[in-house]
Length: 214
Image (cartoon, rainbow, N blue to C red):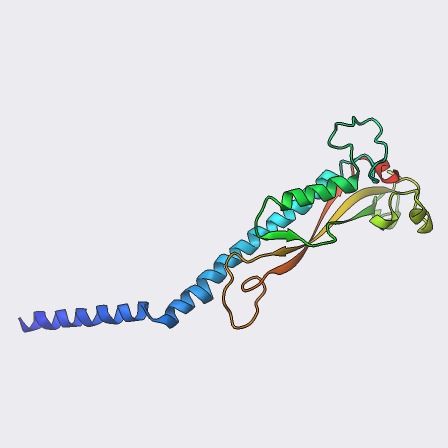
């Protein structure tokens, strides 16, 4: 009988000690504020950053299918009811904003997206060590379309030479990512206690190089 009572006493002491540890405020703070909530925010940051990249990539794909650079230009061979009738700029910007509006916790900063065109030199087999025969050219949107006064001032060609270059549309987005749960830290930690900014770029080959001339 004495041995049985002593066993019960030991079991009782252990259960009380375990409950005290589980209810301790410091342990709960470490578990939730320093481990659980930051892990949730980390997962949310990755997902929301991907959503912003998706919006940027949608803009690059939509813009690359345009038939002219300038809004209001005449699109040859395209019906006015076609989704590709508007300019590269209009399609790219609209696609980015429309895609970003689908998701919560992300926003595109003012002044973005920004567009530019990269003329990537083509490597030819007749050049030394199979290197590109022409240098890569980056054209900001202010110097487009080709043939404009700004383009001529920068000594840019009137049209893209398909035998020398591959035209690539680059869409740049600077966006703000909101944390899923704002964790109350003593110091400001972007991504946990406050929002943070990311810069994303997406490239897509332009389907019609002549679209850069109008």
